[in-house]
Amino acid sequence: MVTAMPASAWTPPAALAVLEVACRTVGVDYAGSELVRFGTNAIYRLPDRKHLARVSRPGRDRDAVQRELDIARWLAEERFPALPPADDISDEPLQVGACVVSFWTWLDHDPGRPPDAYEFGKLLRRFHEVSARYVADLPPIDPLGLVARELAWLREHGPYRADDLDLLEGWRERLTAELASVRSQLGEGPLHGDAHPGNVLRTPSGLVLVDFEHAAWGIREWDLVPFALRHRRLGGSPVEYASFATGYGHDLAGQEHWETLARVRELGMTTWRMLIDASSSVRAESHRRIAYWRGEPTGRWRAF
Image (cartoon, rainbow, N blue to C red; front, top):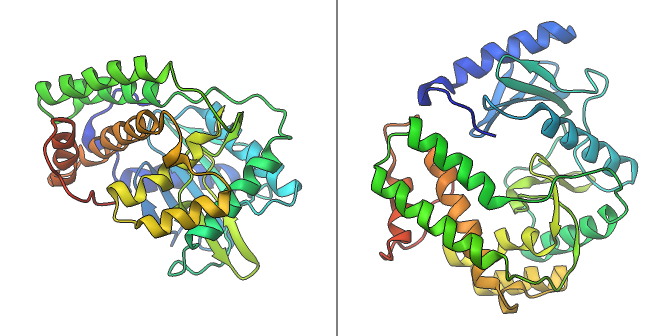
């Protein structure tokens, strides 16, 4: 959930200040922590080199972070390759002001070797098979509800024109109506919520799925959409997608209502990027994606 805050408030120094408070609270060293990634969350490798800390963007729901820890912990217990929480530091997230901090185990991995399409498809299929046994409550997936919250925040705080936001709101309303007619071929169950190769680590013992912050309940097709969009928006190839579909065992792009599912994901990709770019002086990628919704040719989108 996005809360009212100045666009400039979410910065690496602000995240580091939150990390300091969280580490002091649980009694671990933070001096010399390495910033691994900064975006929706700030990810730090702690100086002991054995743990990660994830600092949420202000406004993240603590209960959602707890669900993320719970499902990752359960998957590890089920011997599914998921990044395990660092229960030796804290088995629950810490609220620090408007941010939430969680601690995870660091796994050595090769960032230069993401999973190939077939491997990723097989891993995602296995996740769906194993998670079918997960009995804890998960919220229903609501991608357009998230878009609505992001648009509301951008309208109040973001540096974008009102007519651009009106355009995207119109698409959100249209897609909400279309989404009501979508029928699943794969059934419902727990979802990763943001399933793409960037959320997989290649470790010495094999592939490991990470980042369950968007875990939800819904039709399984949602977890296939991000990869299916790679060759449409982010430069992937049809051959790559075919390999993914073979690995998973289902061709989403050949399914009825595929276009609606793709547009919903694309709209979320647009508002998410606008949110990230709100604190930057360079917003070319946000404007590229906005232009797409006007029907203008935009070419390949650039990943963050």
